[in-house]
Amino acid sequence: MKDAMFYVKRLAEFMGYPFSLEEEKEGAVQKIVKLCSFENLSNLEVNNMVGDRVAYNAFFRKGKVGDWENYLTAHMAECLDQISEQKLGPFGFSFTSSN
Image 1 (spheres, rainbow, N blue to C red):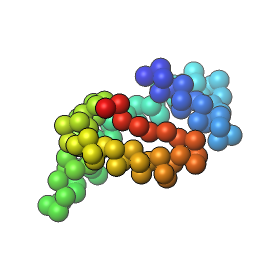
Image 2 (spheres, helix red, strand yellow):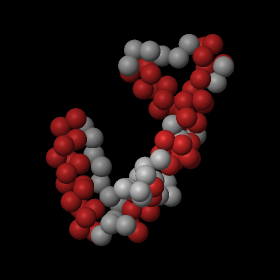
Image 3 (tube, helix red, strand yellow):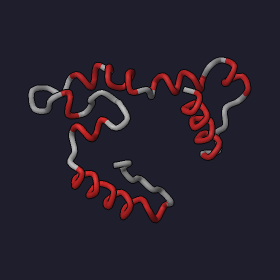
Image 4 (cartoon, rainbow, N blue to C red):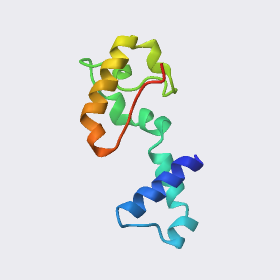
């Protein structure tokens, strides 16, 4: 959670809206991290109301690092890496699987 709090604060500063000392003391950063957590997002009522057209698990699985290997082949992961590099590389992002 400390890493998440660090990056939420860093993002706020980057956007020109750093947290005040009072906001930090009141736990605003922790509240944002909790609201954005996998557990919270996957349990929101709106995400349970996808109807009979799309299965709930199409949007949320376990939220575990590396679990993609249970769903994607090595070739699929390579394709996603190539697409990510092509689309996000010019912005300095690098997303490669650790396969």
